Amino acid sequence: MAFEINYDIKAPVFNIQTYCIHDGPGIRDTVFVKGCPLRCIWCSNPESNLAKPQLMTYSSKCTGCGECIDACPNKAISIGQNAEGKYIALTDRTKCTDCGECVQNCSHNAREISGKDMSVRECIDKVKRDKLFFTESGGGLTISGGEVLAHADFSANLLAAAKELEIHTCVESSSFAPREVIDKVFQFVDLALLDVKHIDDELHKKFTGVSNKQILENITHVYKDLHVDVIIRVPVIPGYNDSDENIKASALFARSLGENVLVNLLPGHKLGESKNESLGVETKLAVEVPSAEHMEHLKEIVEGVGQPCKIGG
Image 1: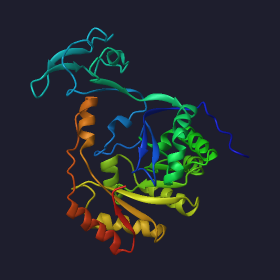
Image 2: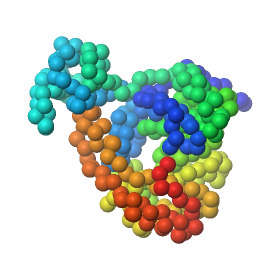
Image 3: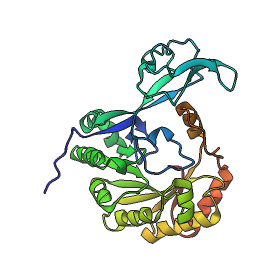
Image 4: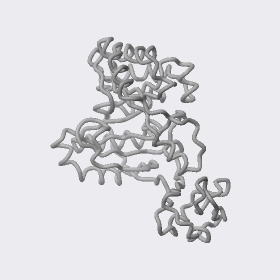
């Protein structure tokens, strides 16, 4: 039976980024969905963890004018000093319901709501405007997150809509989902950018909250059974997963799929720290940025087992 696209299905989307060059080949539009079953302690998009709108505040933009105070129906906002001694609007997260009323009354763009429900129709209408750029550059649509598979119906329908328009499709995923979800989504995927965060299962559980057994099995299934092109992506977080042993084991896993499967080593960065602050969440980990020399060393390890490797996405 042919797949009938449902353009009305919705998912919480926190960004549609246009003209991306790091989320697959060519120039791409990337749809970022909210909601993820993993809790990676180094997460660079913590605003994507929960599948609901969330208030984000930016102390650097706040003038402490107080316009937002009266707008809050829960009396969750007051003026006080931050760690640098600057007087700003502070939000009591135990009272805040992420309603967004304060956002509407902030004239300095110091507050925003991350995420809103969007339909497949709304997303594909926006993406298809850039089809000319996709065609000329070999680009297309990428769905990222959060976790694509956490919104399987939405993702499958959006990918199918792109395929109907002859737009190249790509997903960025942890591959953590039941097999039936994998099959539903990946039938419409041209390229899968799949994370291997740690090969050791116990350490994977410690750092992400879930086992990697299903993840590795799903990646193998996607490549060998569903015949989707795969790039293995390893986020390099110094002190956590950047040992020679783990990188070599990750490369050997890629080689078990096929000798031409590319490994992308993604240097860790600090963007998640400021985002956690904007969410009112205490940062669990101060991510160290790996040196260029260290990244080259790890690249040599991957290439040493015969696997192609690239630093960055």
